[in-house]
Image 1 (cartoon, one colour):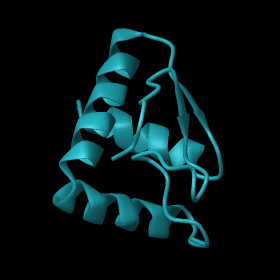
Image 2 (image 1 turned 45 degrees about the vertical axis):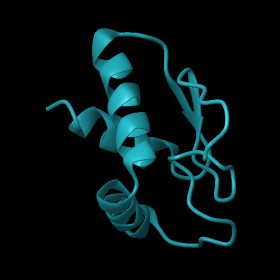
Image 3 (image 1 turned 90 degrees about the horizontal axis):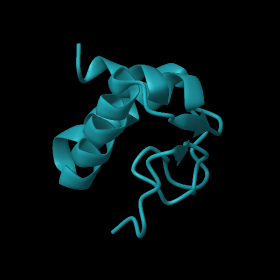
Image 4 (image 1 turned 120 degrees about the vertical axis):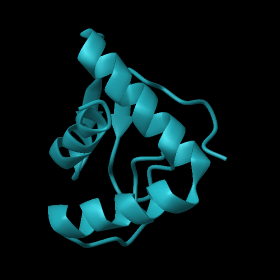
Length: 83
């Protein structure tokens, strides 16, 4: 589904092919991205797993780097899973 998952570097750029990346051509702001991720969370177990593992790594202090247009919002979403 997402190929090899890299939990150290999470790409949020549209079209990147990760659970955190919207499809190519996605032009929304952080609010639209958060809505997109909520919808994906509800419908895709791979997204739930990836977000939960990334969030767990963050709260444990493991190195996780978010890159791409939605990096800050993606980090916030991952951290929120474990609050």
